[in-house]
Image 1 (tube, rainbow over the protein chains, first blue to last red):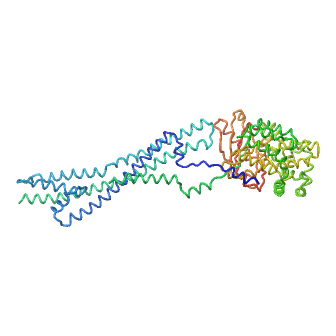
Image 2 (cartoon, each protein chain N blue to C red; image 1 turned 60 degrees about the horizontal axis):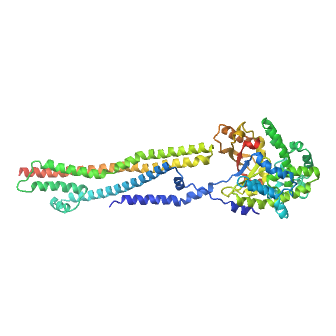
Image 3 (cartoon, rainbow over the protein chains, first blue to last red; image 1 turned 30 degrees about the vertical axis):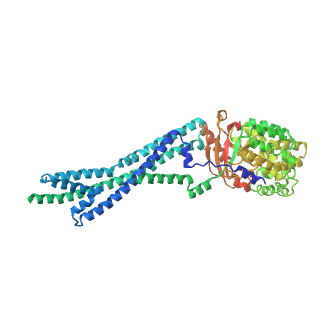
Length: 238
Length: 376
């Protein structure tokens, strides 16, 4: 009879326990921790995306340059083409060495005595600059990866404290009293892990990529240095 | 030039949007999990007694004054609303709309099945009373009538036959002997009342509050007169007005706890609205609470400490416990664990419970709040 009516009247709003309500109901300290970890995650992913794009582009550029370099094209022509541009990576290395070579041959008296050392130095400096560019910001990933869980843990400890304060205040161990604090506490750790796990993985991957690219530059520098050295010796003899 | 930051911001914004909007499949799963328990409560005796005293003095149903019940309801809107509702409904409805036979017919068929599985007292006894109704009589017509008069005269004597199971547990507990005796008396009275009510099949509609009042009334009536007719009428009246009252209560409060005469309070409604509490009558809920109470021996000092414990348990269709009772809410008090353990023991000891099988959906899951104050 009236049961149906009663049921309708009874319909009550269910307390939704979404992640957002968890956040908004959290203590201010836990909230700060969560917000900080979220920003760290944003930063982290910005770096990851930047690095992935940079490495892809650099690798493609190196492939292209080596193809051109070993194609038998005149190095003079190549230098003329590249020197007009703003170069990165391998072309920058080539241009730096060639510029030093050119300058040493300017004027009436070519300075070829220690040209070999100068070219090596110039290429070293360029390599360092490039590798530094590869590695920049990778330490941020390492830092976030290492400290994220701890920051999250701090939020968790704080949340647990809140939960126990709730128990003490209500003198009741009901799940309803404890659960919100525990949930928000665990949420803080979850965010910490969400931020730090990609950071750690990306750091390992990206730093090894950066090392590989640096090695490739070194290898090219050695090869190019050998070519130039042969030229120098031939001119000496001549 | 640097795609990283925008890309990262977009990625995280998408993640948050995803969380806000929610995962559809996950949502469905969450909805499915929600289960509502039938809430029952033990309420301090003093408050309830005050309300009931007025009722008890009153005759069957006519005397119950709507004013009193209304006042009580107003005073205790939140927690007591249920009790008020129970009490209120009987007096006003009968007068206003004495003609609501519909509820009666249904209960009869239901009762018939019950007596068979549960020989004890409650249901079989009730059947005999309902003289007016031909159906119940054939089943157990002879037994009920004799019981009624006897009970009225000597509620205690009759108690043996009526409630063999419940009584045993109390005997075990020394501390509660007095209480148990009182309870037994009350139970007997209730049983009588219940029988009468059941006889008319109005049992469903009537609340437990009625049970106590009805018991007193019934006893008087029996002593004074055959009272069978009167009780039948009262039962009808209760049945009639109950539905209206229930709806009123529900509208007022999400969960109103109705305190039975002496011992129990049944709360109506559930937070999620999924529980069809309306179907459980006060007398039925009262019967469950009374049965549990008989076995309950709360630790000494727990009543003074003002602590309570909430347990949730599920039952099989035959009234036996299904699995272990689960502690939902326990007080952070040195006596808390002992109290919870005692409540748990009582639940496991007193089964199987006599519940109407046809309403299994309503009492499959029960959330019982034990408050030692109620017992002492």
